[in-house]
Image (cartoon, rainbow, N blue to C red; front, side, top):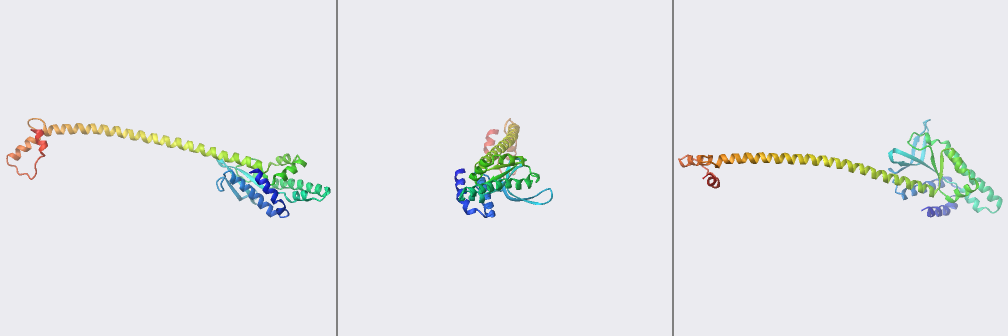
Length: 264
């Protein structure tokens, strides 16, 4: 992915130079491509172009807010420095090349300065003290670092971490892994919760079965006692009732023959 996006950056360098808005849009598109490549989904894993108000009540539009588990966030701001970089490679002589390189380094440092002045750390969201500043063109960043090795340190002093395609990709893969682990942990907790609920339900069900068994035993015993009175003994209820019929009692029905046989 890094090689592919680096190649795309090189191919677009000349086409984008001179149009800062187009460069900015392209840089944001590179971030979104990486976010989606690592499996983060908009609205859940990240939000883009979100407006927040600073301490003065001024509106701040953030390029990307990456969501972390437990409500934490990381801000990514896209900065693209391609114009001076392209002029460096298109320079016709050593003097033009030197001047373009100087402008390129100045452009990167200006991005750091502009971003630090926005004070995104004070926007009231749960985030680290640092902001990720994304430079979409990896070779352009590499060239600047060769000439000014203090760029990273100067950025860190302003709570800014400069990232390119490869380092942002690694960072966001870590974020995606954190979400995966968080999801697994939540599932484990839910499994434990549902297992406990199932166990409690089973205990209640087994208690009910014991009660039903006890009630069946009582019912069976009561049934046996009733049947004894009905059919057992010389003077049982069946025989007494049958004698009344035999003596001429008027009845429209007749006792079940099997009960009469048992009574006899």
